[in-house]
Length: 292
Ligand code: PAF
Image (cartoon, rainbow, N blue to C red):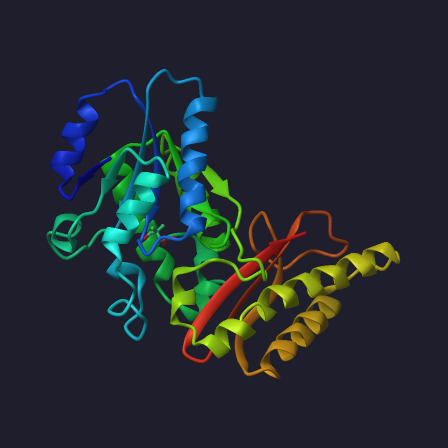
């Protein structure tokens, strides 16, 4: 596995195999099994695509642009050596790990401004977050020029906005989704889980359990032939949030949305739904979601 920190080095490495299909997994490091499963998926995609030559590339870069002023940019865990060992074991061919001065040699003044869906859900609590994500992802796409790029469903809104960006800007890359990887107790793997105290870690799976219970409530209504309307959705969302908050959580949202555009579902519902949540446990903000 090669590790490069300069754009020119990366381009030179790709130039050695100009016809190789590139599968790319962007990350902010502090890798866990969720990331590594994306690396494996990238490798499998190359095999499936029938390409005679393929390269799995990953990036490790903590992108300041997507963090708000009071967020955890400074303390975001940086574990580069351990990450490289995991990437190598995960079958990655080349790692791009630029310094900030390489990716942002001058203050970034051109941004990708995603559509209004960027202001929903996460965007309501993290202004400009998705602008920062979309900008760095487009920049990484321009540098790596992958045919396939992989994003986990855990960051559901991010996945939707990146898909939209690739489609509307006619980027020559297929966006591939990876399933959320969970610990045995259901907690979605996340770099931020490392912030949890032992007591918080024991409590944390309640978020997923609450999502599962909410899904069951919706399915139960459907089985009994009841059509849910906006008031029903809002009532069961509020009940689910209270169910967390009585156990010490501070819930930003639990929302039942359409998968296609993250808008509130119509009634009667015909589209696929997803339930998304963000809640704080102590100083740690966890997000998760579950599709119906
Ligand atoms: O999902 C992440 O880790 C980040 O948002 C990404 C896509 C690597 C952009 O910095």
